[in-house]
Image (cartoon, rainbow over all chains, first blue to last red; front, side, top):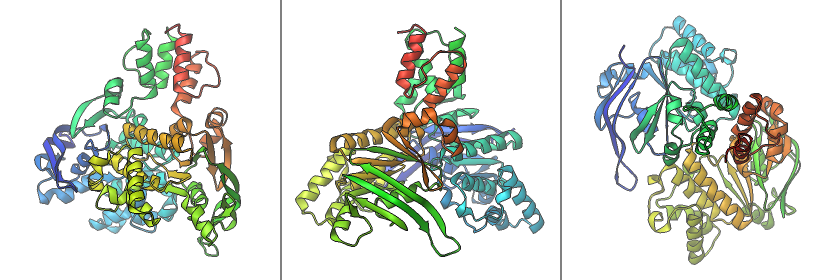
Length: 278
Length: 285
């Protein structure tokens, strides 16, 4: 199967407020396969958000190209199709709500592309059920919690027919319960509906749940791999302004003190197992 | 010296169908020199609480005061008292507006009517505090800075007002771990050097545990817990989860280790202590 998203030599250059040329992305080569759950981590200014905006043609390459479902983002005729296929959810839940009732908010996208009334109703219902918000269909969005608002935003992309959702720090403004809601929702959509997920986050505990973690630094991919591979590189992560999960840091420190602890320990349970079997 | 809430209730849009009681009969005293974390889920009332503390909102019932001066007053004293409380809002970088970092940081002190020399000194001091080199950044546009730098520039603008009480609303939201640590290193330096009070609203249990000496847990407009973070996290995990909060990772790791039979003391609240204890149990150096 073709990759959902493929970038070749993707370079993005912009002019900043002091009139300097800034290279935000320098030749990114990447593929995201159908049904993958990919987390992207990196320090502020490493290019994560810029990259995400290329995935549904909100930004266009200065050099190189981006293909979404095989469609080149530089071709204007492809834009509508690309933006239906790839939904985006941003950081601030309050900036993404357009209607005064939850179901109208979810219906906004599909209505605009001319989905007929009967199908529209079905799509909205399915989408709200998928994010576990159906009972709130007639509520006012501004009275919902942060986690609920973000789930409504996710439902909006589903109702539009997106099979790939790109989330740019969707939990940065949420409380612990809201953070869990969003991560669990995306894992469920990924498992049950095979939605491809690109999940940008500063929370390493969230990135640990992905199939693959991509680490960005200064507009390039620094390294990538399974969560086990990436989060075992405790030192390198710290150099990049990131942080390994606590269990990985403990494993790293204990190894330095001479403990024989297997590689690839990143969760509390794995560490507990490793320590109890000695 | 202290800020005080006495039987404070706050109702949004009273007398309308949208009436909502956000705070219910809260009494609270925060002394100068305290570092207080305020946690609670979205809509619990924490933002309403801190806005009553700094006089942006005035209580519907009860009084908010600073050293005995009612913050709702219209007197010169009340105005001065409100001026001693600084507030850094969520995503303060969105409030940067001037053409240069210097102008942005100088805006507050200039409005206090200070002379040019004093303004200059305050800007230099504040920029130094937040780790922005004056020579490098003063004449640059704030919009050309990185996310972490922009946040520090915005915090500098509040620091330049020399507040006795500083309220921070989620100072680390959206920052990477490295920038988070940098921002907190500056906040702690400010706290220690100037002996001011810091009141920090946060969704991060890790930060509440690491930096605050006192923690308020807010739920449905009331204070559920008021005490040392370590004690609350150790004793009240169940209740914290019920109100949408959590415990820091180190408590979870300690629990996982105990579940596998590792004998650990019951009062571990710190990762360094936990690591030392694990090493000791396993006979490591």
